[in-house]
Image (cartoon, rainbow, N blue to C red):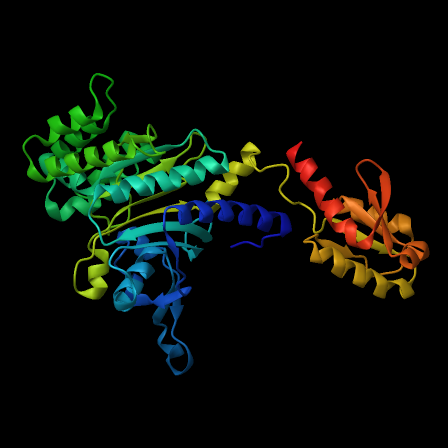
Length: 437
């Protein structure tokens, strides 16, 4: 869990602003939920490993001595969404599309781009089983990353029912499917030998382990669809899942996600609530993903008692920021200074005039820093330069008497005197010119 200094916050707001605008272009509406949920709301929704990473909150007051937990910090934004749908169903439309950008907490081991408190940028659509939902989700996250400056990302896609079919064909008992998926999902992290060892520890037989790992080894001789179709054979569950994947890819080819989707049979995603297509988005130089998601048609039913189809995708803000920072992807025009102009004065008696001029400039949407002390002009200019403030407005006796302000450009070391009313538009005009050059 970290502190964010001004430059960090500006970068975060820049990324969040772009993602928000893209999500709203696709008809998603904003939603917020509390940081804390009842512990029973979260437990059992994320699988074995997820349960261990939930931050639990001990009971308080007279119940403190029990050492039991009744609340928890939210682990993701999807389970709280399901609770909201169940609780507010009568107030929401049958087809509901929401976005939510808020922090979540996991008792995880920190690593590069991995923190115990981090923001997720979620989009979810509820009320339809159409593959159009998955296609538009892929397009929305594709647009968001493209507008942030990414061009080398890939949307890896698989299907939980297809995985179930593969496991069944390989001879894995249905009761062990969850354990097998946890191991398979680590293939790109621990390799084939590591997955083989973990499958063995989880009680998966040798023949099943061999069949699965042989299938998941990449082959250039045939397409993924042909390999999948050949492996699942006549299994009805596997065939239906394959058809669903083909429909999603076909529909996505008409969107901005065209050419970005790659079928990945080993992709499992650890969360146990997924029921259909699952997606993960990756870039080459990041161990891990920039985000992921999938269809979870049964999750809302756990709270509501009736099935509501749902699908969502979550972008991880922290990892996006890490990669953008390392690649130098933030625009040079991104504000790094606290103000556009700093007003300098010579005497304490001039301060009321400075505050009045600042008010005029702010009325033109100029960001103004008023230097609070009557100090040597050189010292004030040095401070403005150290904070990267591009202009210094000088208010001496002559300027105050004439109703003007002398504006010094610290980059060119030139200065001009303007009326206090016209100074604001002049400063903004110069800032726009610099941004465009």
